Image 1 (cartoon, rainbow, N blue to C red):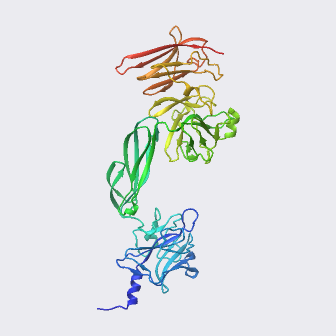
Image 2: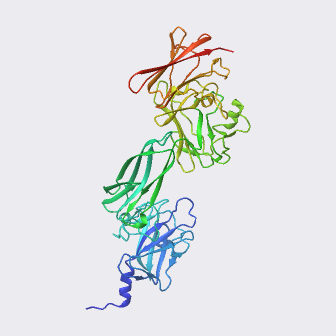
Image 3: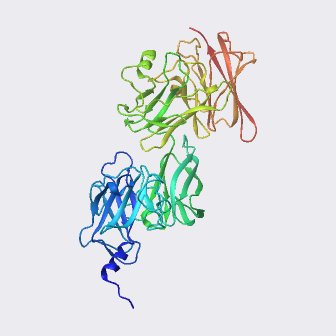
Length: 531
């Protein structure tokens, strides 16, 4: 048996310690957040007496600076981590000034002038380190995967980590990380089914990973290769109001387990869209109108088109029962429409989401307007096609009809009314089956009673509305908003060719198929005049 001197045994033990994780370029301003993590991969504690950390600018030993040295008696536990960090690193075991750079640079761990470990980053040609340099990790940490891996080639041993893990494992063997949740539809106007899709990525370091994934009450045992995405889809039937569902990460290391919350809103929210101008006149900006059932500060709410959501910002405060207008150019909107000074008109602080009006003849959706609350939930939404918009200067207004989980929108019954009530929302059905009004109406373009409103309650299957003269001849078949519980049409006093009809009395004729197949029909006589 050969007995080695104590110093030789100590040196061999210290040489197992590695530079395990490095954050040299924190995201955003550095803010004293740099750190270096040491790791002892052995099954016995390691004394760190005399161990020093050196920064090599451009990887050159001639331009080296000592940034840390272990205090006498410092011991790194078996399988343990030690974090050397700047002041803002809460997990730091020791605090020092590092002032690392983005590379090509290097770090060396030394004892008595001998190199114990080294890491270079920034480019393959960088001096210092072991083997090839690790990739540049701008805004993210570099770390060994698995912890302690040391093939003497930095390019193989260290990878860009998905998140900082000072004082803990860089990656677990198994880790299914939830990356996104989607609701379809993102919001619906009435209670009913929503499709919820959750996605995880297998980020653990083993080649093949198995876990039990949980999305709310749904569970699924999965097996995936490293880097693969796993999708779980669930259909939920939800009532009106806000809803939250949980999504769990699955990992072999408890430190990587977490629970995320996915939120969705069903039914009308306390603040909702009432009017949209997506095809303005040449002197008019785009705008949308909101109404609040309760006082709400909309600073952290967002307005979105089919793309990015933009924060509304300070000053957007809606009083209970009041309206607020969001506009691309508030001054121009106030000038064109002479809006009451008491109405709040603002431009979203993160910019205006330009509303597309589609291509000529294209029936597909041109764009959409979404309203998101401070928690990121879509709380109202209108999707429109080019054919929904009409002529320049005509706005879209909400009706009370719900179909396919959405409120139906129709062209404005007269000029736009930013900041004020509009006829479509002020017209309320009175008859338990069919309501027609105002009677008489006067389609003469003066914004007073210009459109005849027709509402059928409980319409059954595919109701049809027609305008006939007193001799029973058809004048026009109306197009409207048809939902399962209500249908809504409007008539502007023109015939099938778009020509104004003569002043006089006309018959509103509505028919619908009952559940058993029999046809039901309703008739109302209404007067048409012009001032």
